[in-house]
Length: 200
Image (tube, rainbow, N blue to C red):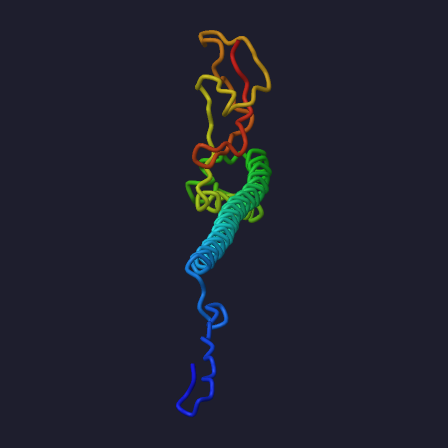
């Protein structure tokens, strides 16, 4: 072809644009990239959920461990307090036993000492013994500890300690015929069994 001047017309080259060079991706590659991104996001979500579950499990176990620890400490504290209380009560009981021996030597019964008043002509020292005896019994009552005297009852190894078995006329075997030392209990808990003589 020639132009109006007769010169050959330059051939125009058609510009071929590469789709990748132009920033456009073929449809197949775009779908693959999108699928890869979705997989990566799913993997990340799965990983985050697994970590969340692991931390939640750890938190729940830590809480359960703490609750168990708190319960154990409460039980141990209660047990220790009860053990301490019983040790003090045992000491008070021993003091009461000693005072009862003194009163018995002076001819003063336990009941008359607890009922109030003093025997006629009782020395001041004996009056002091009786007052101390009443005070110690009052202390035991405040902590709900009581003495028990099982004379005439059937022998019970949970409540009584048999020191001796003797034949006793007119009494069935296995009955407490004499109380050598009274027992003490706090409700159903025996602090000291009664020491007794039992019929055979």
